[in-house]
Length: 277
Ligand SMILES: [Zn+2]
Ligand SMILES: [Zn+2]
Image 1 (cartoon, rainbow, N blue to C red):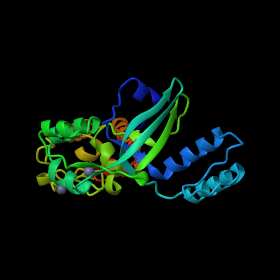
Image 2: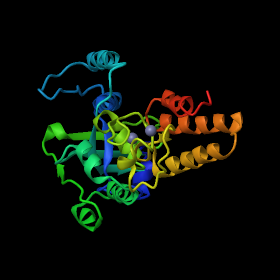
Image 3: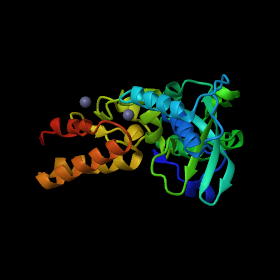
Image 4: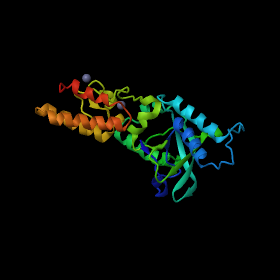
């Protein structure tokens, strides 16, 4: 996932139809903190229920909430974002929650079953409209826009900020890393698969079918990464791979795992089974 920057919106890299991920655990806190820090001292902030408290008390409450949330699992939801106010150095995005009509994991299991479908879905994430869905070779479950104040979130972006609670997906692995706690129908969340034993599931992904190796899952880690790992494993069969090359491949896989929000320790699996560690 890539945090959304102001640049992405102003330069048109994101549109109102791009499917985004919002960290709702962080979004409310960030927004409230910003309102409070901008607020004129003569005007007190009111809660949704109309409770008015001095700003010092709101600041204390927000601190308590922030402390309480430390170490808890972040919750994410799908949103589409609409810039409602924009100035050269600040942008307010109105984010509306969206939901697939179908559980996302079932969709991943039944429809993203070859490399072309994965690419189609990546195109859809960039512009998630019904007409885009029509043009794809796969059947994407209907995406619903949820209404009401509980499903509307405001996110402030500025030119200097580094933290964000709004993210774009770059590809399907990005999506799988967050949806349904990262469940994947190919590797069951292990991120590596034995291509021989999962031959049926890997059909259409162009993976080889050797047993007793652990291949980077093409759906979780991405088609390019999986293909690169496969080349490496195939070369291992032909000649004794140097320790340097094996370590290099491990670092490469660890980086990708971390980047996608998976545990980097999983990269060990690829080597234990192949006898390099
Ligand atoms: Zn997987
Ligand atoms: Zn096997």
